[in-house]
Length: 50
Image (cartoon, one colour):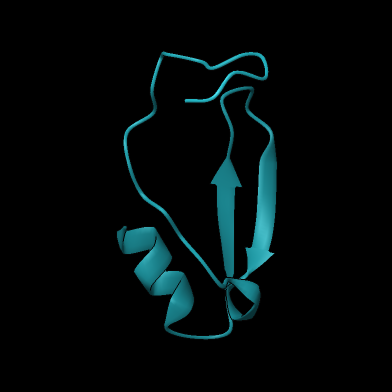
């Protein structure tokens, strides 16, 4: 959360790294929505309703 808050405080870039090690830079001015939470090991597959 501190990295997100720091990126939002000025015209900087928020760098994110996924599980495979790929990095993505997002201009802080373009961030519109952030959802923080724990990752779930359960994956829903198919077209059934949840």
